[in-house]
Length: 274
Image (cartoon, rainbow, N blue to C red; front, side, top):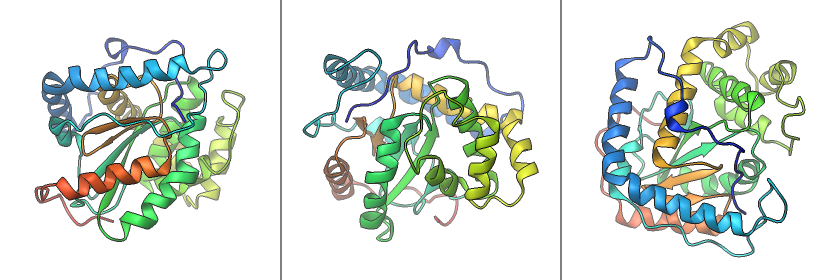
């Protein structure tokens, strides 16, 4: 399956500036992204662009990409992109050991139907096969591209993470297909999802959603994706190897196993993984 593409897509230059309260670690990550972009932007943008062009050629109707009948060959890994893995054991939007040899970075939108298919069909298989072995870590990046409800869902996911419930919220939000921009992710439904995900302090959840820190965190993830040339969701990096769209599970398994065989021991992470 291909990814979903917004119309129109914002450009990196149109992204708002970072919150004044951004932490030094965030500023450091942005500098890392900028440095990596100099080395790798051309290769990664080309890889994503080629996949996007292929997806556009398969569109069945305006605005809706077609299903892919076979697995698309992912682009080769770019070693410079390994630096994008944050490996922060305290990151609530990540799952798996911080020192896992393979990091899958996912740029996703809660309103994207193909992101939902990945969440329901492929992610559970990857967790069963590789998480308990300590082989795989998944790091989520909020990449809302379909308007206000996507933005609000991203903020809600971040707020859920403040109470260590991001992945529970993720599973509820993606638990079934939802119509895009029809109120499925309005304020009332997001609170209902939070309750279903087991978030105890709803007032704090709502306050965190509305905070400048939440908006800054979501914006940082968006800017990282745009810097790489991501324009549709879902988009992935598996130890620097780009994969676009909810491809068949075996595509991701092959990428993880290949990366695990060639991975170097990562530098000491910031703590123990979850």
